[in-house]
Length: 339
Image 1 (cartoon, rainbow, N blue to C red):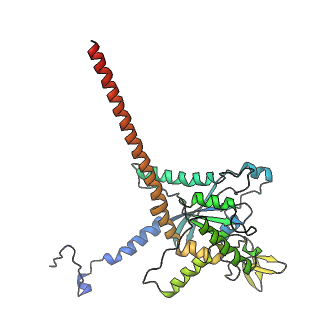
Image 2: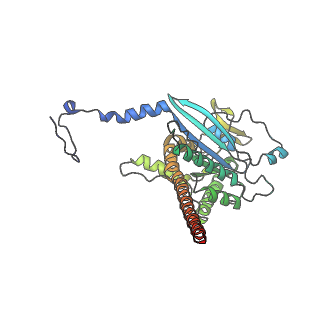
Image 3: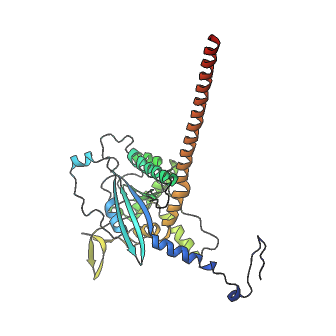
């Protein structure tokens, strides 16, 4: 007979005899989670023509945009406010991922770009609102999470850092979603130019008070290799990327890339771009952290604001009701005295 006082820690001297089995809890959680599958919602934003669609296809080795027709200038102007949602199921080694890509209208396409990010901001809020309603409802068993977990913000390689529109858009979104800045079409720049632009963009992000996704601090028990990888990721912001839907062959080696008169660019070659770093960060190392921050910070802020507004409305309604009661009582007394 073993008696355990609450607060004491039981450490059996003979594990075989006293083994209870709670050490298998992680395995139980793992099995249940794998069976249920994972969800991830990624938004892409930035001006048109920066290779957003191509990069997404390259990141997830899929073709989300195969049915999309090329629009002429007039059609593009008409569709500047359209937000398109693509959802696909991906399975790898028995692990299922429901990936949702939110394709936003190209910023700067309209004649008047004032508040051109409004529809993006509104979409993020709508997903928070829907989740809040589902969470507050009676049937909470099968709530679908469509909240935006990450926004890849594409920055043009042809400007001198951030455009005013980039600054305004990121500042409008940074309290609602994890922003990861991306320097698009890195193959149009030399290494020295990439280094200069990265430094300039980082300085402007800090100068304008834009909150981008922050990598979590390493724990004391993390090994040196993990710490080094985290530092490389931090130093790589904004990620200089290249995308390609084409398989090319060079020297008997097949890869996704681009062929130019002066040479070949490999999408997944770390010497050519930060593509691999970005993909590993999004999928292998930080996907769960992006989801956790969305839930614990961005959504909680929205939820707290909703509850605060609801409380304020209830208080105002009570005050109004009390005033009406007093008014009615005065009228009743007045009529009583007249009689």
